[in-house]
Structures are given as C-alpha cells and as structure tokens.
Length: 254
Image 1 (tube, rainbow, N blue to C red):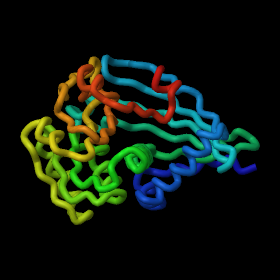
Image 2: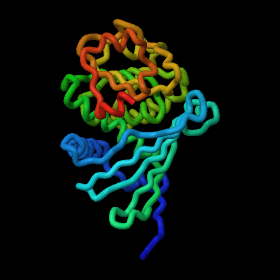
Image 3: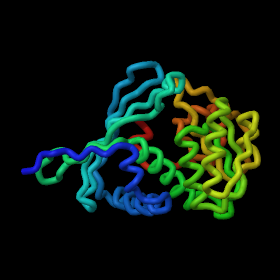
Image 4: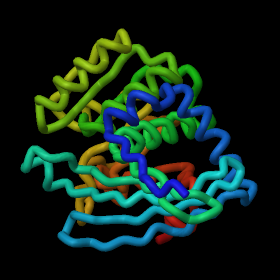
C-alpha cells in the first residue's frame, strides 16, 4: 500500500484550482448536499491562544464526492504587524476506505476563494440582481477575493474601498485592473457603505467587535456579507437587519 502523502503548496493549489465562477457552482452543489442531509460536518472545535487569536478544526465528509478531510486553520489579526498572514493553515484529506491521510494542502487559496464564492452564491439568492455598487471594508486577502467573486457574479461597475492600511487599498485597486474595474479609495468606513448595493466587511476579527458601523448607514435592500464575525457591526446596526441568513444554524449559535 502506498502510504506517501502528497503536499501541495499555496501556489500548487492555485494552479489547479477552479475559477471563481466554477467555485460558486461547486458550492451550489455542496450546499445542496448539505441541505438534504448528505454531508457530515460537525460544529468546529478550537482553542484560543491569545485574546484575538484562534485555531479551529473543521472536519467534513461528503459521501457524494467520496471526500473526507479536516482544515486546521489559524486566524491571528496581530500578524498584520508581523508581516505574516492573518489566516493560515492546512487541509488534510483522507482515504475513505482506509482512513489514511493522502494529501496535505495549504489552505490559504482555498479559504479565500471558497469564502468569497459562498458570499456571492448567497447574494445570488438574496441581493438585487441589478446590484452594481460594491463597498468593501477591509482590503486584505478576503477583500480581494470578494471583489473578484462579486465582479464575476454581478454587473459591478463601481467599487468603494476602505482600509486604514493605504497599501492594502492600493493592492486591491491593482487587482481590480484585471477585472476591468477601478477602485475608489474612500477616507472613511461610512463612505464605503452609504449608497452601496452590496457591502462586504472583511477586516480583522476583533474581540470584542469594534462596531464601527452604526444604525442608518445602510440603505433599505442592501445585501451585506460579514466575513469578519460582525466585527465591523454595532449591535444597533445588526438590529436593523430585516433578514439574517446563515448556512449552518448550529455553527452560528455556537
């Protein structure tokens, strides 16, 4: 029996990964599998080594794809000061018949792409189809991936971006050129929210949440995706939301 383990770097994974639209369609199938009870995915468990830092284990089994594995992921907002990734980790895939690990994958590209694709998939059912103005608060890895996801899935022609790190906004603007989009760098979170059709908050996950967005900044009918565990959202702003949607009620409650 071959017991060798294939290791794929972030670059390896990106080279063989599907397109953003392809990822959205794969997730559509996977969410259906989960909805009809064909997926085993227990609530994630983890440890919290610093005030903001966490390490989570995220196992899943999808019989229809003969796939089982676990993601061991760390989220450390303080890494921005260390010039290190804020999110990092590995995905271990196992053989279903023997349980043996067969591959280890860097999770960076997958985490960024899958998360943004899930937001765009949800927006396909919940946002206005004519949505064209996208606001992004937090222009790191998730900000970039969400820019691509929404640009592929919606007729986006205006992007407003805010990040206290000007270099992050500049990097996002550079990435937007590949999508034939221009990014307007705004000087406040409010300017990146008001007047938008779709809002993405993808800043660092802080504990407690900083709650920058108050009541009344968002117009009626806006779709918002909170990638940051609602760190950007005040309790009053969350209280104004008409419909709150999650893909996993048990996980959300936890």
